[in-house]
Length: 343
Image: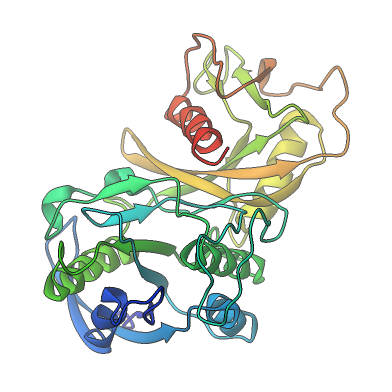
């Protein structure tokens, strides 16, 4: 019998002169045990939900990250916040490395044009494009812009803390941010159902158990990214891809990325943090490719190519017509959207 997963769901106290916050009201309804529905099999499974209402200040934004750093852990973490300008719920694929507060927080702090850690934007390691609208109580949208206020600060801090925690799993437990519109557009009951649907997908994210694959988003100082063309005799021969490969047993995403790039290009890189994930089925196998922000001190003019026959540096905003392996074309289009939405 499988152990019952435990998840953390957080909301926020009221802010900006509001008397209530829908995220707080939703979270207050969620503490305790629930039955979720596996989106791929329609079978129900139990989950225990732990909740926390965060203060709208620096301490609240860092509270979940601090708990992770002190040794606490969950099978999934879902942050829920209020988006007053939203008409429908919004799932955030990315947290910006940016703090630009349109109003002071509840302790009077107001920072403009600041960075959170200076290491770049962080993306969730879930393929949200797989999430079927019919499995949710109301329509939703996907976003690469979680804003630059406390919601974004909280999301960025939690993803950083989870990724920095030592692990031999291919990827950490999933972290996601869900923005809910105000109660004039969404009821608390609909918000609760939306959270439950998100948790079901977070805990059962793929229709088949996948191999975990890492791909390096290795950037030049000009913002270009390195891609390679597979040699004719290789799998996906003559197609273009981000360099990388499968995680081995007991190997984390960061260890796998650094090993794979060294094996493929004789290049020593430093794995930074995930930017996003893409699921792919090929025959009777499934793969989920995690795009990882990476850096290197020096790239020699002539790279040693072991599985590629050519490499190119491409601007995500000016990509020529290339034949891409798997979903790598979607990955570079995602980078273009990230640069556009966070510029």
